Structure formats: structure tokens, C-alpha cells
Figure 1 (cartoon, rainbow, N blue to C red):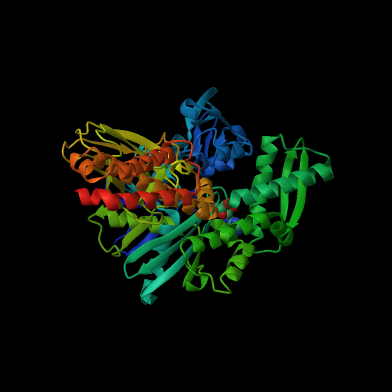
Figure 2: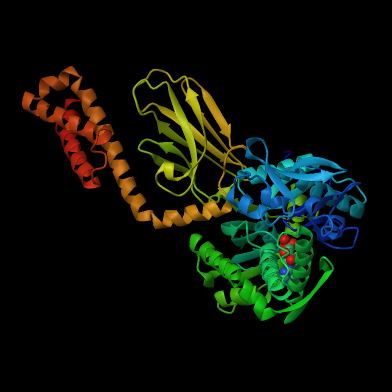
Length: 618
Ligand code: AMP
């Protein structure tokens, strides 16, 4: 991936259901949202395969009902995930197209194209959508477009971000930066309001789109946009609302027409389109009709739904959104009253009940709706694209800071996770820390990299490991450096180096490593809260054990020295050696499960012995 590039760069919001492109117009000093060949500002993220051709965007979506098995949408839900991922398994049940497990458990979309069976991975489908967005931009701008900033949900993990970059590469685009969707929206928003901004402004971004839900807290101060915290759900959005409506009508049809359409993909697709239309209507009317001609075997279907019933069907989803809002504030340790602005982003944020719940949550605060929720993300991406392009003039000057969603660190003695980069650290970031070997003449160390909030390594998520070999012969506590670096796109690399020999090794967390999904990240953060007391106790014990090990080692070394033996009487030597035996039993034997007090008492005894005899003998 290139860093900065000469020439025109556009911003692309690659959405689960719709995508949108925008460009900074330097002469007009503003962002233009790029409309497609149909005059629409957003383009469905759909790709369809027929006997004769491949269709992308509106053309693909329009024929979905007649060709459901070969019309692919939701590729973003598959990107960077394994086939066996429970989220994928759950999604598959609702898709009319087929997904099978490929090599390395990669989900492969299986379909018929020009009469032959074909398989595509999610990156390929997303790349086709990106190609379409590039073509739309090229015909609007009447020039070639090579470079783009692409947005992803804030909680996309490393693997999903990399897969998005891969999709760009397959599309022949140079992805100059991946940025978080709510951050992009904040750029758009910040630009609108910056002139009114006195001092620091806390902004809450509520982004409920077609397939994902993201909330973020940002602080805007002068030209700095800093993300203070993020939370979200990669599986909550307009499509889930549509699903609930579809299920509701499937049951209604069963009851009223004695017709089961649940196994009929074509009928389901047609019903889904009608439900989505009705949902949009319900954002400005109190009831909407559902009309599907020829739903199944010449059966037409006409019905209606009120806004009240719509809200009842979806209340559980709306409440989940509010729980996430609450959690994000708690995580960022910020009060809802300290939010200066609450900004709505994403098509589904137009739903009146969602707005009502959000407004109630923020104690009646007016919600900011001035940015078109479908376009805000692409708008921000276009500004970022212009900022990264060399030679583009009149771009507003600003610095964008993002944060890490989970703490990152390495495994150290006592099954402890030593945190190198705490959660919510601003990226890009690079940190180096010195560690020590744990045994004499240790020739290598294994660096095990974890992400998570628990004190014990094994309770966190192992991202990968590598070995640093070739250490010089030396007593334990020989130093070596470990460096963690996260780049602008949130991609982590870890390196280790031993100074005297210069030996080094490194690892980049790659696509095939299982990173956590957004749901798992939330679960982990919640668990860390629940187990805080337990973790504290474990940490106390682990630290005491390490200290016992240190003191026992130093006393043992001293015992080997001549001048020590000569100064200590045989009775005291007896005491010292039995204390060391007890230490070994506590650390390695069957007494490991003893309460922390037992360890602390013994540590006191060792410290006492050390101070009485060893220090004096030096
Ligand atoms: P986005 O991913 O931000 O483009 O959002 C697309 C989602 O917003 C789709 O699920 C749409 O059905 C939904 N949407 C768009 N307009 C409305 C509206 N007026 N009322 C409710 N949902 C809408």
C-alpha cells in the first residue's frame, strides 16, 4: 500500500448495503458527493451473475428477486472472517446464495455464472463493488482515478482491515488509507461546525447503517480530531430490521394464506424489498403498505404495517443500540452530559424511534441531523483523501487521531500479560520496552503476542508468536527489547532485539491469524470488568511468586559464594536452605494453589533472610 500519492484521490464508503463515493474539489473548497449513472448518491453493494453478464450496483439489486442464488450482497459481513465463525453461520441462514468452506476455512461464495459453477471470496466481491465506485467516479470527474481512502467500521479487526485493502488492490485501486467510518463522519461534521467551536468539543457519533452499528466519542480541539472511545456491533443495522419484518410477514402469510414461503428464496427476496420500502416509509408516515404481486404461485400479497407494530417488532434491536451507547460512554469514562453534540449517521438513524430513544438517553439534547446520514462517511473520507494527496490545494488543515480497541502485550513469567499498548491508545503508535530472560544461559525467548483486557495471558486472545534465538551465554535477567508498532491503518507489527549480538526478529499480524470479532471484543471487555477482582488477586499472587523466585535465586547464588558461607553459622544456613526448598515447593510443586497470603508470608521471610545475610555479605 502506498503512503501518499500524486494525483486525484477519492473517498469511498464501502457499506454493507450501500456504497458512496466523494471527492474534494479544490477550486470550490468543498466535497462533492459523486452520483452514479442513475443519478443516485449511493450505490447498492450488490454484484449479480447471470447467464450472459456480471452486474454491479443498481442493475444487480434490481434483478435480485428473479436471480436470488446468484445475486451477492453483504460481502462486507464475510470479509476477513472464517467459514466456521458463528456470525457467518448465522448470516448464511438468511442468504439466498450459497457459501461453502474453502481452503483454510475461508468462506467461498458459490454461484452460477454463464452456465458454469464459480466460486468467489468476499474480497473479490468487494473489489467488484470498488471497481464500480471507481468507474462512477471516473465518469463523474472525467478523469482516471487511482487512489482512494476507504472506510471500515471502527471495530473491524486487523484481518478485516487487511482484507479490505486486498479488495482495493484486486480492484486496481491504490488504497492510501483505511479510516474508521464514525471518524470519517466526524471529519465531515467537524468541518461543518469548526467555526463555532470554542475550546474542546466532545462529539458522540451514532452510526446505524445497513449492516453495522458503530458509536464513537471524539474530541475536536482546534484542528485535532481525537477518538476517545469506540463501541459497536458488526451485526446490527437496517438489514436486521428488515429480517424481523420479513419474519413477521412470513408468519402472517402462513396464518392468513396457509402458505409457507420460508423455503422460497425468490418470494423471500421480493418480500424483503417490499419490507425495506415500507420501513423507509414508516420514517415519515405512521403506516405503510406491503404489496408483492405474484409472491408465490400466482399468489399476490397485500398487507400493511403501522409504525407502532414496526417499533414493537424491532424494540429489542433498538434497545441493544442504547446499551452500546451506554457502554461506550462508560468505557471512555465520560458522562453523557459532557457530550456537546450527538450526531446521527447511517440510513437507519432516520428511524424516529431510534432518534427518540437516543434523545431521551441524552436527556432531551437536540440531535445533529445536518449532515446527510448516507453521505457523511464518504464526505469525511474524501477530505482525508485530499489531505493525503500531494499537491491538492485548499484542503482544511487537520490532524486525525484514532485509537486501539483492545490492549496489546506479551506473555511474561507467571502467565501474566505485560501490556505494551493499553486500550484506547492513539494510533499510529510505537512503543519499546525492555524485558529480561528468566533463566541462566537462556539461548532464546518466545515472544507471544496477546490482545485483551485480562491479567492472565491465557484468558486473552493469542495473536501469534515468534522466537528470538542466539542469545549470548549470560545469567538470567539478561535484557532484550520488544517493540510494538501500530500503523495508521491499525495494523500491528511486533519486533524483538538483543543489543549485544544485534540479533532480531519480527512478526506482522497477518490475515490468517484469528483476530477477535467485534462481539468477542465486547465480551472480553465485559468479562474483564466482571473478573476484575479475580484478576487483581491473580496479579497480586503472580507478582509475589515472581518476587519469591527472584529472592530465592539471589540467595541461592549467594550461597554458592565463599565469603557468604564463612559469615553465616550452620544454623542460619539450615534456615536459609529450608526457606529455599519451601520457595521451590510454592513455585513449582503442589502448593501452587495456596492462598496469596501463604506466598506473601513466605516472601516476607525470604526478604528478611536476604537483608540479614546476603546484602551484608556483598
Ligand atoms: P447505510 O449503510 O448508511 O447506507 O444505510 C443503509 C440502511 O439504511 C439500509 O438498511 C436502509 O434500508 C436504511 N434506510 C435508509 N433510509 C431509511 C429511512 N428513511 N428509514 C429507515 N431506514 C432507512
